Figure (tube, rainbow over the protein chains, first blue to last red):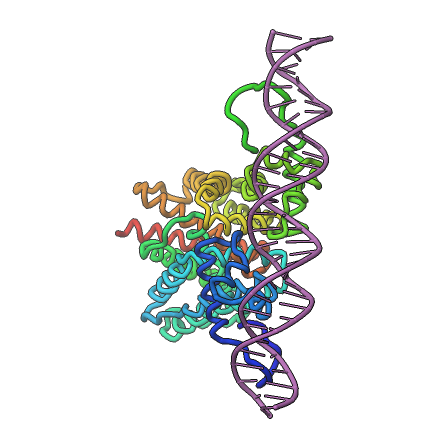
Length: 212
Length: 212
DNA sequence: TTTCTAACGCTACGGGTCGTAGCGTAACTT
DNA sequence: AAGTTACGCTACGACCCGTAGCGTTAGAAA
């Protein structure tokens, strides 16, 4: 997703799609080996077998390049549709954990988030590239559970949306925190514990809401 | 907490404690204005009214300096002892959220975490300076709740420890994720929703464990 | 007081990165 | 064949890192 001028077929020499792919791969490799702070555009260019100027013709800066590199990784995530809500949640948790287990993901994701705290456009880019992609999973999982009758169809739309957001922050936050801050591995047992906590809490949440 | 040689009173000119304070404050200010990636040691030194070499006499590198700067902020956190577990949880959540609401905290914390993914000593330093300080709150809150009879005293010590770790990752993770990734504000209503979810889930967790 | 010692401010340095400019060449369209 | 754009290459100014050397200064010890 490098930046191009707008629309249709252009004249002149076309951009090399091979270079696009090579750059993204080189960025991932460099992130793994060098980490964020020692990541250099020159190094990426060399690895990709490309001139440094070619990088800057596509991405305005290092941050944008890394966001795009990471965003691509999040495409893999999907709701497993295992037949039960608990199974689906566990599945997503384990997928997400596996994603964060890759060195390039953990390093890049946090670095970009850190940078985004001072950079509004970057934050928007992250939201549309990464966050929305994950949030979709929550809505999807809920829809499946409602079809199965495991979850009631909430009437108060606003409350339902708030709950979905909460679930998203809890799941993604817990997985990220466990992996990066606590630096403990996520295994099936942990995923089960989190799922139990989550679904138990969800029941309490819905109960309280319908009571009031 | 700059690095000193070990023990007791030394001879020669003592380190200026005023410089220590000025450096930490300058670091916080610089983080707010420049963000992590544009943070420079030279700038910090100038702001603190100190020579750059003085920084390096105390901290081996930028990372360590920032970790210490951030760690100091986490000293404020404490369990409110409001009389109920729910009140305590909400209180801690709101405190933590307020902490992350400061620009210097959010920027620095994430940047340091990102860096730690490739830096083992840094990770240890974070764990002892920041993480342990927070984890204490969980244990403390549980002890209070057990005194009040709100929570049972678990017999399986290992399981109890795992639950405490889970709670910690969920609470801290959710707050961080909400603040930094979702970039939504944390208000009292959100804190209540999270608390409801958490305590409901905790009940389910304990129930399941005692059943098996 | 005098002596000793380590911290301090200052300056300068080598090594590295960023992001840009300018040029000749290569690839594709019309 | 002409036109247009991407590409590789080289060079550049600006900035930053972390260190070294030196004269000066603030306390402790004698």
